[in-house]
Amino acid sequence: MNNKILFISATHGNEEYSIKVLDDLERKYPKSEYGYERIIGNPKALKKNVRYIDQDLNRSAPGDIKSKIFEKKRAAEIMKISEKFKYVIDLHGSNSKCGVTIIIPYPSIENIFLSGLFDIKKVVIWYTKRSDENVPLTQSCKPPGLEIECGPKSDPKISIELNKVLERFLKGQRSMNIEKLMKSLETKEFYLVYGIYKSENKIARDFKKVKTDREEFYSFMSTNQYPGEINCYKMRRIKFEDLFLLKAGK
Image (cartoon, rainbow, N blue to C red):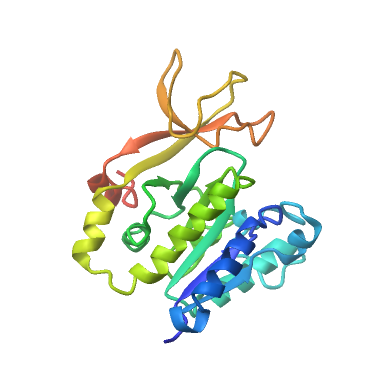
C-alpha cells in the first residue's frame, strides 16, 4: 500500500505530546501496513521547547523556500512534502479543556468529508478570507487536510483518547463508504469561529454558551492562552447543510 496519510506533530514546538502518541500508534499499526507517514512540523522549536523560532509556523503557509524566516521556509517544505499524500492531519495541543476536537481551517467539501472519517463529535470551522498568505498549514496544502486540537495537552487521558481516535481512523477509513460517511457527519456538532472576546471576566469552559449584555456565543480556547489579547474565541453553532455555503461567502 502506498503512503497516503501524513501526520504532522509539533507544528508548535511546545506541543510535543503528540509525538509519543504517534510512537505508540506506530508500534501497533506499522506505517507501511496502514499507509501513513509522520513528520515533525517545527524541529527547531521542538528542540528549544518553544512555540516557534521566528513566527508561528501554523500562520506561515504557503511559505517561501527562499525566506530567511525559518517558519516560512519550513512551511514551504511541508507544502511540498504534503503533495505526495491523500490526507494531511496536523496534531495540536492546547491548555484549554477542549477535549479532542477537529478544526477545519478551510471549509471545502473535501475537508468537511475528511472530518467524517474521524470518531470526533465536535468540529470547529476556523476560516478567514482575508488572505491566502500566512495561513494554517492545512488551509494551504493541496490535499484535504484538517487539524486535531487536544486539550488540556498535559492530561494523560487526552493522549489516550487521541490514540484511540487515530486507531479507529486508520482502521475505519479502509472500509468507509458514502453511507457510513454521511451517518458520521450527521452525528457531529459543527461550530463556526466568528470573533474574539477580550473581557477580563472568567469564561465558561470550551463549547459552553456564554451570555453577555450584547450577545450569546459558545466559547473556544477559553484559557486566556493569549493574555492581554484574547479571553476566548467566539463561536456559533452551524447546521451541517449550511457548511457548504461558507466557501461561497453566504
